[in-house]
Length: 378
Ligand SMILES: *Cc1c(COP(=O)(O)O)cnc(C)c1O
Image (cartoon, rainbow, N blue to C red; front, side, top):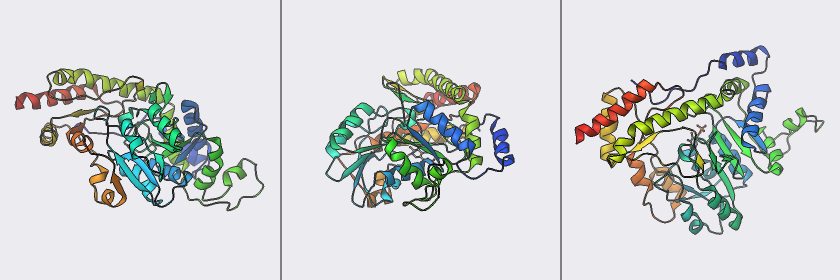
């Protein structure tokens, strides 16, 4: 069976994890966490990166730092992972969903402004498959209405929009280092902070409401409870695992982009014959090979294709069930405008196996199996 995902592995991870153990520093904010944060700051140009226990917790920190109050509204698309919405729902926000663009599956920037009310506080663009949302338009709307922008860049590390790294465009950016993402620490993430004035509050929030970060830097002479907070910092063991992979980030990125390109070339004839649709990368967007998806004609054809692939040793998957039609979505959200694209496009979407060091021969098999399905179908 060709797996849908195999977590990234470089070979240096054990060395760094052993180093953390031998240095007797396995809790958070040790040398490996610092190195990962420095790498992210360097790579993205963000003022501050704080490693977290997940992208979910980075989103939760962002919601806290935006001072979300019960009844505040947050605009996003419902074609996303639950955490994008949950982080704000936990603070009592009402989620306002708008439709997506069918070409990228990202929020349709032309629909955002009409959904803004006097309760709106945040726009959350999700960069699906590492392909950027239309950030110029989104930042412009946010400026006009004095809103925060929190980028869900869980899939967007190493990708960019008109030269700007994803995650470092809005007020806050959230990365994921889950094992399904391009770089991994098992479970983990990072919060990217653009405004230096927010950094101190973020550090306190992440360190259980204490000023321990300032204490370690010698900026204050005692360490105490100074504000609200929780624990969002990962263990050094996880950070050490991630560090090994960040050192090989370009090699991993290139490898994924090559796999993406091979799928694209191999499946192009089927797309040209009008059997399937392939992903679109708009001008100005540089993606990171996070995902390769195709679109079948409809739900029925997609399900038949998944079955056919499985029978022939290929694991293919789909996601997301649109949040606005989920049980929790019905309680915590409203949909502004109409769902022209989210349900229809998500039902047609199918993700092919994609991971670091995916064997090109396996890709040939995947491509041939998809082709065989459509040949049989006629
Ligand atoms: C993976 C993912 C998340 C959640 O990341 P975790 O690190 O597992 O919390 C959130 N949003 C999107 C779009 C994702 O793909």
